[in-house]
Length: 151
Image (cartoon, rainbow, N blue to C red; front, side, top):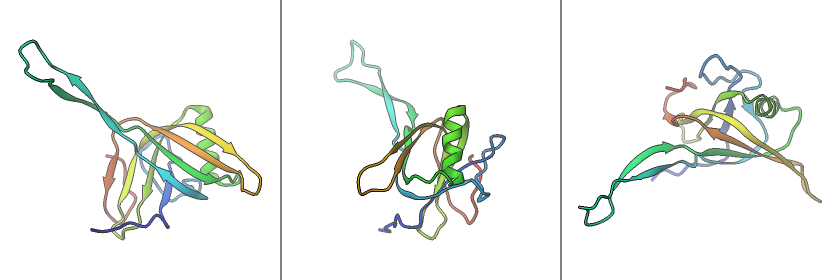
């Protein structure tokens, strides 16, 4: 079994609304990420039990890929964080993705809206933010040596 390290994972937020391509262009990389969670997807179930059934019967419903959340050390000068904050206010849909560290260039990617950007602070701590992305559509995992377009 291969184990993946979190250290070195890079999170991308597209700066281009016209395409679904992730790039390493300025502003596309979200800096100061200290944790990520998601996609948190699930699928509904459709009850097809009828009077002739001897037990409950179900079909699988459409999948809902859920959310992706990032914990960051808040940096108002970070172009990626600023883009996400701005896009939340503008209700702009973007491509997101993160590159894993297993040496095979596995990229988890999708499209979504930044729906949350909560800034917090406490005594003897840095100012932090939790950023939430609501995923719309499917999530993909690709392998290769370049950051590819969402299929």
